Image (cartoon, rainbow, N blue to C red; front, top):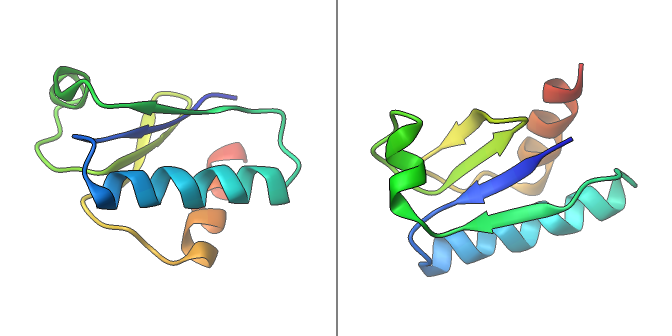
Length: 80
């Protein structure tokens, strides 16, 4: 499983990375959360907002930081 947080390096992006990393540990997933600050990677996905949460290369959340439960739900649903 590949989990990525993509963003410009702003405080919101860092917070999403932190929360996502904590949730991956809580769920005991065998995955590392990559933090990508190369804006061209976001543009390659056809997205013009950040932060982005992507699971297995597919964006599951764009442009805001949801609460912990929403992040957990997005990751679990992406696994199905």
